[in-house]
Length: 406
Ligand code: ADE
Image 1 (cartoon, rainbow, N blue to C red):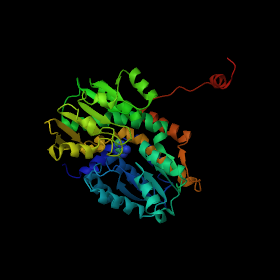
Image 2: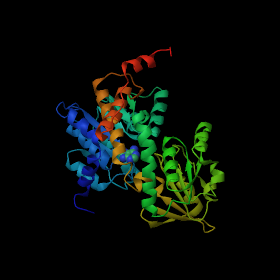
Image 3: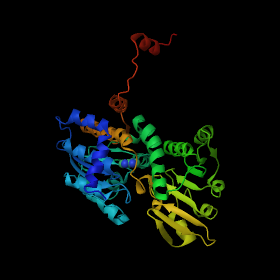
Image 4: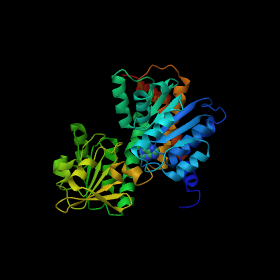
C-alpha cells in the first residue's frame, strides 16, 4: 500500500468529481450547513469520503458509518477521520459491529441524514425514535432504501421527509445503469482474473442496474440470459438482444451469475444443486439475501477461501461453486464501487437535496421526489464541466412546442 493511500484516493476521486467541485466553489462563502449535524450511512470509499469532507467544509458537523460491512476502505476511513469527520466503520466488521456503528452515528442526534439502503433511517424509527427528534429530513441513495421507506410511510410511521435521490433522472440513468454496469464487472474481473468473453452470464433482474450489468456483459462478449418476474422488463431484455428464461432453466447453463433484483432467495439451493461445476455466483443488490448463502452452506458445508474475495463451496457430487464477496455487493466488496464521475452526479444530488431540506423545514413526513430544477442543474453542471454545449430553443420553437396547433 502506498503511503497516505486513503488521502491520495480521496484526492484522485475529487479531481474527477467536477460537479461537486463547482458546488464547493459556489457555496463555500455561504457555509449553508453551518450549525447542522449531518449523519451519513454510505459505502465508505473515496468518493463518499469526499462528499463527507465537503459537507464538513460547508459548515456541517458530520458523522459517518459505512453502509455495508465489506464496502468500507480502512485507509480512506483513517484519512477522512483526520479531516475532523467522525468516522464509525471498519472493513470486515461483524453484523453486531455494523449495527453499533450505525447507532453511533444516530446518537449524534442529526438534523440531516444521508442514507444508502435505509439502515440509518430504519434504526431511527425502530429502536431509537428519541434520537430522531432533531431530524429535519433526509435523502436516500438506493432503490432498496426507497422501497423500505415507502413501506414505512405506507404504515404511517415515517416521522420526517425524505428526498428520493435514487429516483432522480441524473441518478438512476447514470449511477444505476452505467455505474453498476461498469463497477460490477470491475469487481468480478478483479476478483477472478477470468475472461468474460464467450461465457454465459445470467443476470437476475432487469431494472436499471440489471440493464447496465447485461449491457456491459454483452460488450465484453458474453452471451447473456436475463431472468425476470416483470413482463415489461422481460420484453425489454428480449428486445435488447438477451435471452430470457427462468432461474430454474438458467441455473445449469450459467458460467457467471449476477443477482440484481432487490429481492431475497433469487438463487437458492434448488438452483445451486443443478449448476455447472465452476459456476461463479455474485450479487449486486443492496443486501446479501439474493444468493442464499445459507443454502450454499447447507448444500456444501464449509467453504474454502481460494483467492481474495472468493469462497469455494463444494457440493457432495464434487461440483464447485464460487461465491464472490460473501454474496455482498460485488462492486464494492471486490472493487471500489462506481466510477468517480458517476458518483459526482449522485452525490451532487445528495448535497443539493440536503440543502433543499435545510431551506424548507417543516415539510410533512413523506418520500418526496427530487425537484426537476435540482435534477437538471446537476445534469447541466456536468455538461459545463465537460465543455459539452447544448442547443437552445428559439422563441418560435418554444411557442411551437407549447401550442396544440401545428
Ligand atoms: N460508492 C459510494 N456509494 C456507492 C453506491 N451506492 N454504489 C456504488 N458505489 C458507491
